[in-house]
Length: 376
Image (tube, rainbow, N blue to C red; front, top):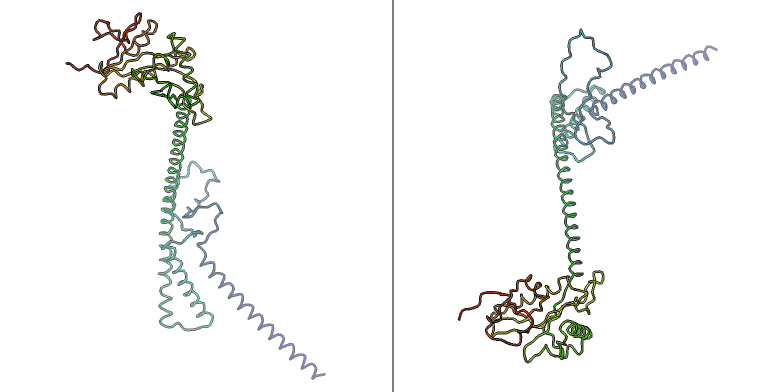
């Protein structure tokens, strides 16, 4: 019995010693965990969780909450709060040179703290190099704080610069949009003008030879010449193609019609085979004039400027001739006002140098001076 009791007592003591050892180990582990936690909190104390919508740069610490209580009228007015300095906040963006320096100093600071922890846990004495590192800890911490202020200012300036660049880019985008709108408007105006020009286009067909090969083979020209013949019979009671146009005497035929359409979507109201006006004329170098024998517009197209268009062409052609001083014609009484509006003047037949076939009885002889006649 005594032997058994002694063995039980010894086992109880060993269990007690084991529990005490386990307790000391757990206390040591807890102490190390606390030290490690405090170290991690100290290293990441500046890191603050921001909402996802926060911008890069800096933030201003919240002002102290003092709005809850109503101040007594007897209490002195509180001094105005100082404007807080920008606070450095780490952001998810490329590091600046200052931020890289902060990261390097923090790494150095962690190595110093690890050295201190190692010395405290193991009870080791620090050598001269370790003591020098330990002495630099305060300086490193101070430099980190200064660099954090500098980084906050840099972030603030970068944000302001980004805002300026964003505004400039927005202005450039608006300018590009405005330029594109102006270009589109100009193109639309040009297209509209071109469409209008095509709808109103006129073609002057000069120097037509009614008996020539072209007139015999061109279906369009054949139809136009038939209309000239009919209109001449109606207005002048004669077919000018048979009696007026003559290569021997120099009389030429010029027609006005619509051109063959280039754009099927912008077609003139009249087709290209419709006669709008014709003129019979010739150059008189001996008289220094361009003489107009006949000009007529179909009744359906009068008053639309077709006759004036052909007169403008004739005037321009005459100005290009070096030996032409004026235009001349014999006008029917009812057409005198038309020629006067164009610039023609009635000339007394007695002042004409010599009577010729252009002076028609019952008509008014008229001239339009291009330039002064040369003196002889």
